[in-house]
Length: 297
Image (tube, rainbow, N blue to C red; front, side, top):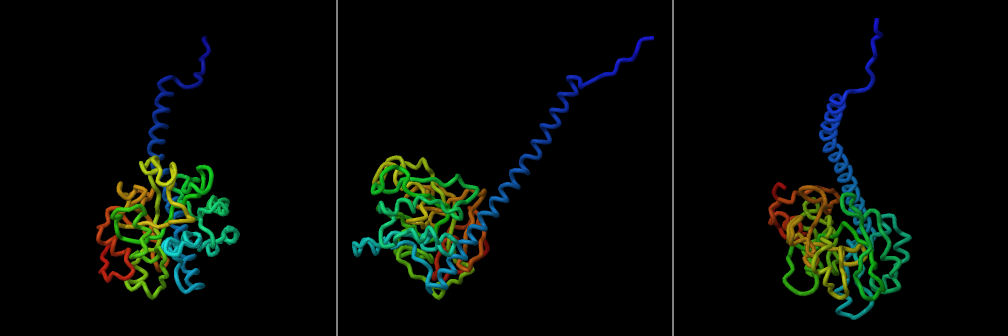
């Protein structure tokens, strides 16, 4: 009597079916995994903005005003060296980066060669985890090389106006309608529209392929991105995630979170705002004393 042979392994058909089942399961699970990861990144970004809001409140408590956006207007009017450091440099101690703050000589311009080492420092709280990793970019001919300053993903909401011509982004306008802008000295009492409905800080990033980056404005490839050390301001005049706002000189609001961007409000809370928000409403949220009636958003 012939002995019965035991079958070992899988047939080709069984193997193909198993692979197909695994592929289907992976295709079903992958979006959920990606969604969970983005939710975690969104939460970390929100935490960054909360920390920045708290730091700005602490600065106000210590100095009775919010930090100015920059002091470039003072520099140009007086021709003094003091000037172009941004609010995000001034609040470094309140964010826990006192050592970096102590290495900065605020009596010199940020683009001074003496400041080169400090402005190259990356500040972790200024990195949105959903955005490409912040890098060193060139922004001045005063410092040799093409890696002058570290980028940031968070800027003060300084204005609701669009650029009407000229060299400087309108977000740096000393007539800013927001809370923090060039040469500002705003306190809580100036936020007549209410702190719960006035924007303070927004997400930002810029298209590295912008023609202005490629042609150079004052030096080849200068001004790529936003720097925490200088000119850290944006305008809501171009909405959220618009192509116009992504251009260097327009200084719009850009986010890598799908469908909108996150903002810190003047009272410290953080909210996600859809890129489809009515433009008039977004601009109303920008102004500190516009007297607008804020609807749902």
